[in-house]
Image (cartoon, rainbow, N blue to C red; front, side, top):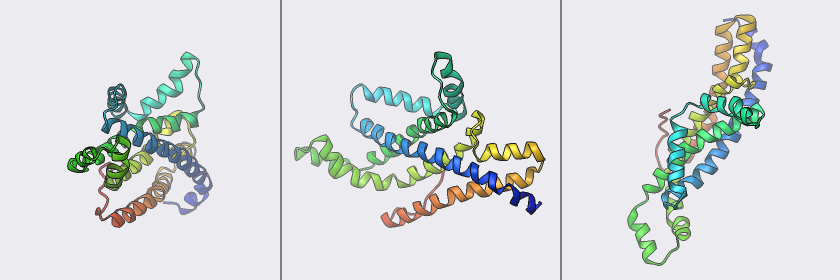
Length: 221
């Protein structure tokens, strides 16, 4: 591999890295927030919302992100709604990620001993008091591993942003390969940048897990 070729490509990859990190980060933050709210609604079986959220979760998790992005970017203009490709990337990642985050939080809440929840009800706690005093303090630490695995999964999914011409890392590599035919060099640099993006997340998650004594992160994605 030609190190000079890789060095010369770094400015373009840095721009792609910034775009990927910005769009991916925003999408993931939205997904965590909405996923948490969705999990709370599902845990307490809020009428009307529960069947809607279950249907949404199944739909989002069982359709590829690329198809969702195509629908948002190419399909919505057919009904008069045109969105910027960067906005589409954020919405698409948040749409997919919310479904995964919702399941991660909901399953962790479900692992909180039901005896404690029943005790709270026996003491006359409202739903909000049960959530604040019992469910959240115990359920949120349990969700660290699964939420962390979802964050890493979603960061890797940002590679499909290139499907709608977002100038992200993958699109940068694809463009350079098309121009200069130095496939190995550019794919190697692409891999390094993804490692640089994901490694800090793994380190932070491991620190959080050690702090709460939950063991090491097990990434399934």
